[in-house]
Amino acid sequence: MRALGMLCGVGSMLREAEDAGFKIVGNFETRTPFLTSREVWNTNFPKAKLLTGTLGVNLEVPGDWRNVELMLGHPPCNSYSALGNNVASLEMSAEEKAMRMERRSKRVGLAPLFTANVRLLQPRIFALDNLAKMLKTLTPEWWANECPGYQLSFIQMANWDYGTPQLRKRLWIVGVKGKRPFTLVPPKSRVPGPKTVWEAIGDLPWEPWSDQLEIAHVHKAPDSYPSGGYKTVDNPPTPPATVGDLAAGFLALAPKTLWPYRTATGRIARKIGRVRLHWNEKSGVLSGLETLHHPLTGWPLTPRERARLMQWPDSFHLNSPDRASFSRSDIMRLVLFTGKAVPSGFPRFLIPQLIKHLRSK
Image (tube, rainbow, N blue to C red; front, side):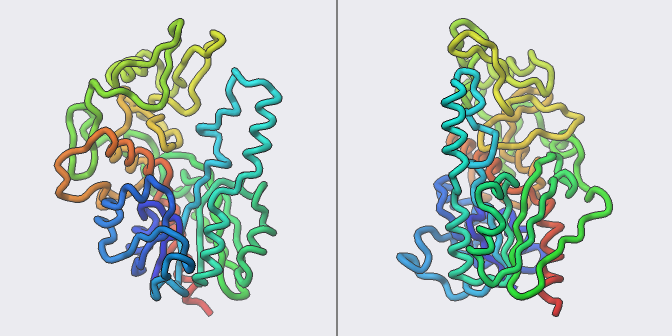
């Protein structure tokens, strides 16, 4: 059986398909962060192609990509996510908020590209991850029109139920060729997996100076400038000068307290999602920014700590084995794609049921 990625990032979902017995034949990707991380793809899937372009137009379709048994992907959810959505700003008028919300409501992202390639490649089953809000713009009727010949299932789920230490509510759309749609058999109880931040990352060295390059458990240098636009409550506001200053700021706050800052009009507001995690509770949702911080040190989570919170196995490489150092830009690239990815717990649970459906008559 063959599995293909379609907007599947660096392929963490495909690792679950590979572990379930599929041969990974490739991935089609257009997003720059994933294309600048080819080292990750090539290390994990050395025999599978990572292609970008326009399939069937200026890009030849590999023969073993057609009629694959399984196509997996996660088109970006930016259009539907509250994280990073500045329409909640206290500095914005009601009219401007309404205009921006209206504009966002019409965005469709890369879902049409995904469905166009479903029609081109005709996989027997496709499955993709996104946010349930997608269905307000791209309705079930839209999906039916875009994917003729497929029986569609719309699965709303919480990754917490499948062993991931984040709640992370999501939508999965599964399309099956034929007359019989796929029906997920949910677990009777929570799938085994870490329930707290510390269960997920506690065995990794937590001192900011203790790195493990081989698994990309790498901290930033103490004097490196923090990313993510962290202002302060000073008047006028000033961002922390170093990552160490940022960590000290988080340690002065109670865990799970949103980062406070002073707005342009002098109000004290909070940065959505920017928190120091509580060690004995579930994690907040990872994003493509360094929004989550270590519960004991206040430092930004390392790439491997972020991967652990996504339930990626340590055997999924975030770098080539011979890498001897990580630059700041290397770390930021890993931060971005670990946040814009899919936790492994649900695909690990789903894919065996998709195999059973494929083999049934």
